[in-house]
Image (cartoon, rainbow, N blue to C red; front, side, top):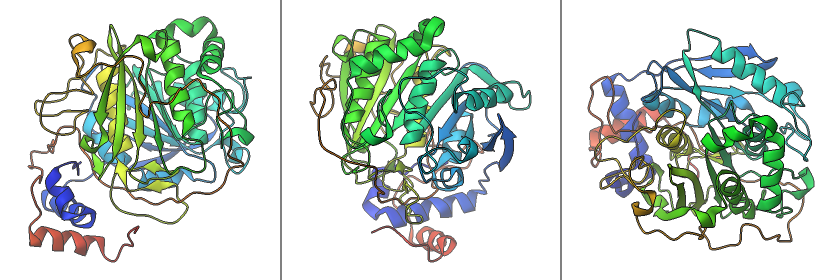
Length: 432
């Protein structure tokens, strides 16, 4: 529950920063809830239920986190840095394993244009959500159900957000190809945002009106050599066309990713707002995460986990973004002092929920981070290959405070804190 976004942590380096966080957590006696393992919708699901409720709506929020190809759900559970995010804003985390081992090396079946609410993997996931919503012990607000995923899991999140927009108030796509694409098309952009948006509205059918009360974010990192980074702009523009008349019709603000929670995040991110406020965020990282879920913990895990401890804490970003910009739940305003998406001092920019969106910084409608044309078709690429992974569970909070009352360390670590932290960490191997 401790953020490494403070500049004092960066000056120490990521090892010392994480050590200080662990030492502080140890001293304060912070204990997270336990994960449980259940069979829901016919799937094996890792479930984490925090003690806190969501600061908006009623009860808790729910976020589905979908793994990528060849990645076990247990890896995201253990190394995705999900618990601190869940605790900070009262979000139940559900990490399902793809039904029946998935397709094509454990991938989610997002392929092609033919999807319904009951086809392939959509039916089991929606059944799982229905079971979770019906559990009174979880007290999940049906207006705060979100889905985010990595790679094929990100593409599956796109499918779910389109076939069931009435169920999902928020969609997060991390290094995922566009809606309607095939497995052979991940290495190059093979569709346009216009085509993807038309398909999304078609899949939504009589629930298409619910698309107007969704929020979405997309993420890609420049050294991802598995899924074309060009899909990031296509996905963001698809949402722009579905929610409005394209990103060029929305008010845009370009922000520095270095101000977000994580382990030395770098790059830029752009918010897009309509009259109701921010609806879309496009994150373009340059922190070297590669094709991986960026945990922002600063601590490396095993090879080929497809979780990377570098860069932005995407789990924390997701829960804050959805809480702040969910039109169905009223929107959450970060505590005083939180800015740029709940990440440091100054005025709240990325997660501002009130006022004219056009005044939230320098507005430049029609621009996307990186300046590329999100509707263009590019060539190159090839079949899916493995990419570097790494990362581990870490810490991150939304408001910089421990709800137990223990103050959170935010300055340079003392030698004692560092030694305590390193002692707890042992000889854990770090990514170079």
